[in-house]
Amino acid sequence: MIHAAQIDMGTDTCIAYMLISGILGLALDRVLLMIESLVLRWKR
Image 1 (cartoon, one colour):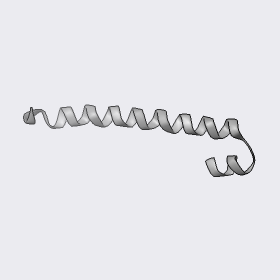
Image 2: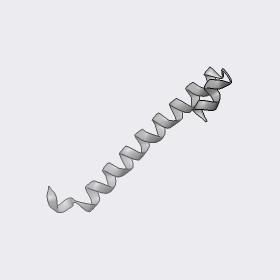
Image 3: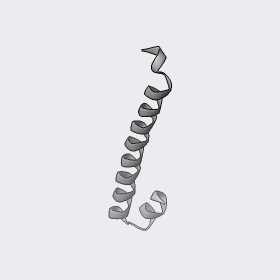
Image 4: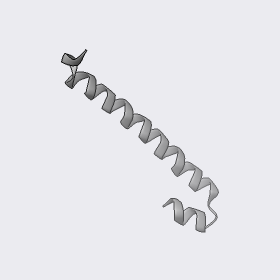
């Protein structure tokens, strides 16, 4: 999708996809850290 936006000169679309992927990555990181803290309580 990002590549198609770059070809069509859709800079705003490209930036929007980049922001969405960054937000999703941050959310996934937080969820995985929460799961890790629940699963590995014995390791503390």
